[in-house]
Length: 282
Length: 267
Image 1: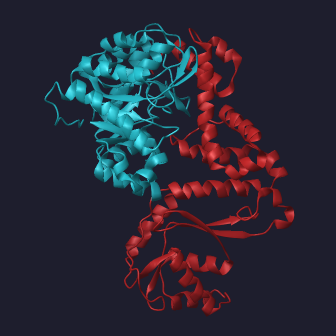
Image 2: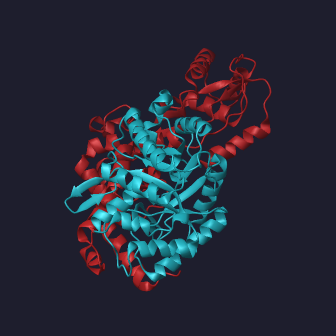
Image 3: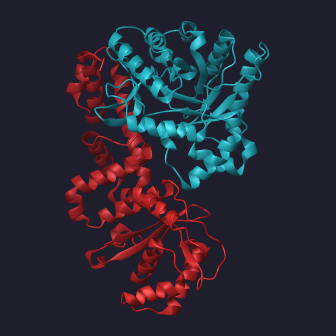
C-alpha cells in the first residue's frame, strides 16, 4: 500500500483530475479537519469514499510535561470513529508547553525520566482511544540535555509503552546527517516487529552541516536508497506514505514519486513475500 | 508528572528561547547545537507568520510586511496559543491585537473592523456544516414557508472596510454598515453583500421561524416598519437566486428548527 498525505493545497486539483494521482490510501492530520465543513469537507468526503484513511496527528504533544488535553482526545476519538480511520499516529516530540501550542515538533530531552513520562502518556492515550498509538521518530536539529542516544531513547519508549513505530526514513536520513551517525545501522537497531508503517519525504539542505525536514522538496536518491535498504531488511509488507506539505508540484509529478516508491516496494517486498492482500487495520 | 525538574527546566528554557529569543534562556540549554536551536525559533515563527499573513492580506498590505512581522513576533512572545488548529491562530491573533494594541486602534479606528472582516471570511469558509431543515427547491413564496440558508450571519461594521482600501477610509466614513455573510449552498464559497435595515428585519424573522410572504408582511406591519411589498418580493426572489434562501416548505418540523438554532449558537 502506497499513500499520499492529503492536503488542501492539491485537494481541488485532485477532485478535478482524479486519474492524475493513483494511490492506495490517504493520510491527514486530524487537527486540520476536525470540525471543518463546507467546501473542504465536501472534497475530503469524496476522497474518503474512495480511499482508506490514516491519521497522523500534530498536537498531542506526547513529550511535553503538560497533561493530556482530554477535550482534544474526545474530539479525536469521535473523528476517528466518524471517518473510520485505520490508524492514528503521532510524533515523538513536544509541541505544547505550559498550556501554549507552539505548532512545531520540538525535541524531547533523551533522558530516563522523559522515557517514563512519555511512556505513561502513550499508555493513557492508547487506553482512551482503545487502539495502539503509532509513534513517529522525528527530525531534530539539536539534541537537548541528552543522557543517551536517539536510538536508545526510541527503543526504550517502544518497549516501555508497547506502542508501534511509524518509521520515517527521511527523518533517519536527516538526523544521521545532522548528528553524524550511520542511518542504516540506526535502522537495523530498531525492533522489526514494532514497525507498523513508513513515511518518506523531501528535505532541505540549509547549510553544509544542517538539513531541515521541510516536506517541501522532491525525495532525493539517498533517501530512496534508504527506503530500499529498510524494506529489504524488514522483509514484511508495510504501508508507505509520501508526505509533501510545501512547494507542491503537479499531481503528475507527485505520481512519479509514488511510482518510484511503489517500484521499490514491489522489488523488495511484493516479489519476495506472499502478503499482497494484507490489510493494515489497527 | 514523571518529568524531573531538570528535564522540565530544559524544555521550559527551549520554549522561552523560541518564543522570546531570550539569550539567558538559550544559555541555560545543555548539550545543544546552537544553529539548530535558532532554526526552531525560525520554524515556529514561520508557522505563525504564514497563517497570519494569509489570513490578513489587506491589513498586511496596509501596515506593511515588516510591521506585521513585528506584530507576529510580539504575538509569539506574549500570547499562549490555545487552539490546536493552526488555522485558528488567526482568530487568536485578532483577539490579541484588539485587546493589546490600543495605540493602533486609536491611530486607525477602522482596523478592528478590518480584522473582523478578514477573520470572519475564514471562519465561515471553514466552519462546521449547519444542517438545514428539509425544503423543496421550488414553491410559492406567497403560500409556502420560506426556508433561509442556516449558514448565514449579519455583520455590523462602523467603517466601510468591505468596499474601500484602508488608505482611503477617513472619519467621515464612520457610519453603520451591515453585511450579510453566507456560505453558498452549492459552491460553498463565502459571499458578502451589504444590506439595509429592512433586509435585516426580514432575515431575522426567517431565521427564527420560516414563514410565507404574507406572514412576513404582517409581522413587519405589527412592528411599525414601513414596507414596500414589491421591494420585499424582489428581495426574496433575489435571495432565492443567490442562495440566501434555500427553498420552500409546506410543513415545518418545529423540533428540527430548534435543533438548528442550538447548532448555530454553538458556532
